[in-house]
Image (tube, rainbow, N blue to C red; front, side, top):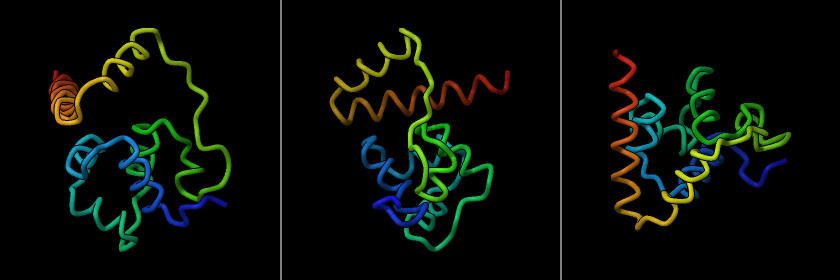
Amino acid sequence: MSEQHSIGERIKNLRTQAKLDQAVLAEAVGTARTHLTNIERGRSKPGRDLLMAFAKFFGVSVDWLATGDGPREINETLTAKELLLIKAFRRLPENEAELHLKLIVAHTETGKDS
């Protein structure tokens, strides 16, 4: 069993490890910040689609996120460009990293309407 006993605890742990605030994560997965707060505090649980969005965003298995059991990571190979992007992102100061993440998320959301 996982050290984090609830879905909310696992999501909060992933978010804090990624150094994201709730507003950025909520926008990235398509939910309200207040709903994310309630999930992290155990007041509500994410629906299936939101659970899948969290798992995809963090690159973890839905089963692990939902139950704490099984392998955490998904064995997905990153491309060279994705690895380069991650390495560059990790070298940024925290305030700049958050700004760039917001810009990327906003840009990709805008691109969906095309």
